[in-house]
Image 1 (cartoon, rainbow over the protein chains, first blue to last red):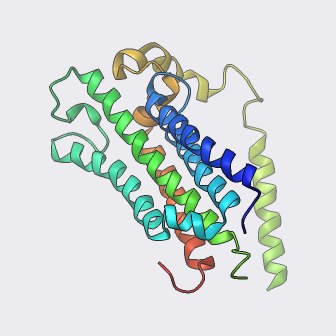
Image 2 (cartoon, chains in turn brown, blue; image 1 turned 135 degrees about the vertical axis):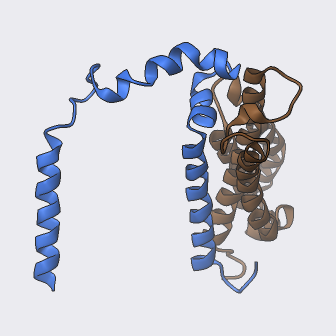
Length: 142
Length: 91
């Protein structure tokens, strides 16, 4: 399904800004409004926009289904992996202050929370895109 | 069989209605959930985690285990949709 040339051009212009804004929301989760869940959904919305404007097959070329499956597991592994690292370095599960970084304790906790947010963002982005791919029907194929 | 389902549903319903009387009123400032950890979060969150956003500090640090569970729920939902709806055996 190919949309009008105006829609395609505007979509091509807007998508990078949406993705940049999504990264901003994820990274600034610790210092302003935002976080992994919100940023991940915004990032996924850019892929959904591509899917609507260019057709599902074109969107699948940009971020394949194999990638979405891989990434949805990667984000969860980052989160759980940070938790297990804390156990390895002698703390509780997700006890961030035990991570061996050359920083004062509160700073380590802030940084680890940030890393965890990135993991959340990756998983949410991949799962939302994956669900969109599974539910949407390709008009050319159907 | 259907009678027993109805009886158990009614029983649980009555139990829930009976327990409902003990729930604090909506927005009650004396509710237990507002009076044990909330003050500590508000006073200590910035010093503990060096994050300016208290919501993130609670979400990702104090209640990190809960958030891990939430992320697992989202992951599971994605995998369930994938298993039920993905067509043609592509993976």
